[in-house]
Image (cartoon, rainbow, N blue to C red; front, side, top):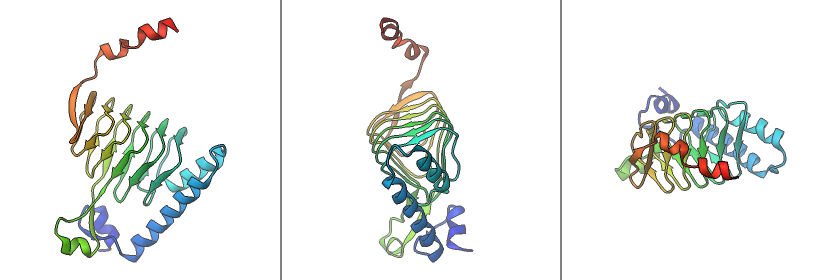
Length: 198
């Protein structure tokens, strides 16, 4: 079994294997090329991101700088938006649903390392997938750790460290990230007065 196959089965694997290092270099090169493109070059930026990522919706915006490891393990739904300095370490799948907003300086990290230094110093890693549902807003400076699922229609507060699954339809925040409350009908009415006045 190859190290890449072990990685796909969520087993401990050697991240320094030639195949993995080669694919990692390719992904980083594409990110570098993307980050050098002028923001006005919409078509080229879209083409390059479709070449890098495993799956995209028709409409998406990824603001530079953006970094990932491999790219092919990332899937974004329709109307995905990520702001400055988003980092996705996609050793395992990272799947975003439709209408996901990611604020600046967020990180999604599927990779982890053994606690014992002997294996860690040998380049051993593990990788667990991250899944984000539809209509999710992830606040600035949020960190999402390996194996986490964030449910649809959820808001993650700025600066959160998401260490475990978060259900659908809630506001969650903190370190570690915890559910604060459900999102209710009152939230839909919250800005109605301001809309009517404008």
